Length: 227
Image 1 (tube, rainbow, N blue to C red):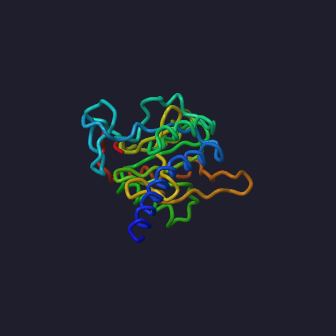
Image 2 (tube, one colour; image 1 turned 180 degrees about the vertical axis):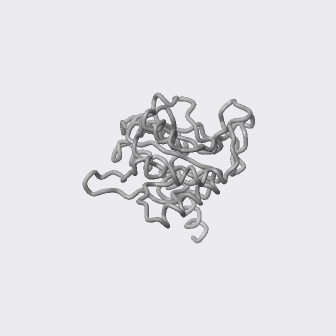
Image 3 (spheres, rainbow, N blue to C red; image 1 turned 90 degrees about the horizontal axis):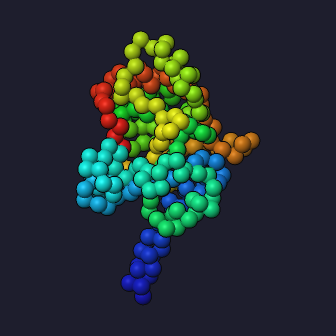
């Protein structure tokens, strides 16, 4: 009997793990109106190894964002239509969730060590933060949508902007965790949903730029966006 119960528990946990992606994707899309699309995931040996040791399922041998980028369907297919989202994650239950930025939400990201420094500084000075996603290599600060013109004016006021600081606006994307997340992908600052809008509050980019630039100056520059 114990063995049977143990098997049932394992099957239940496995089933919950698979539905966690679908449930999270539906929450982002249906309730928050964030456009999402399945990530390519892991599997094929030709891809670059992710920090977890898994390999990207895309055909690129040196994929800069293993597993956590769109492939088929592409980023342009990202939607908040719950019927499409449910169909995608029913077919691919363990597909990573990729957020298409620039519509309802944008982001800025730093290498993990610099991102942690920026987060500590912003919290120390009492800035109101929105959701923050952490991966083994980067921190993603989710913000309200911004235009290229707005971003250009903000950066023009800086003496120097590190290339390790990335901006994810229109046409960009970032990975999103499930509700509980994993060691490889989780919320450092979970979304705080407002009663009035039933959506997470997002800060304007101009309140974070100075701290992100200062923290980014301590991180090595690079020309590749790593997951």
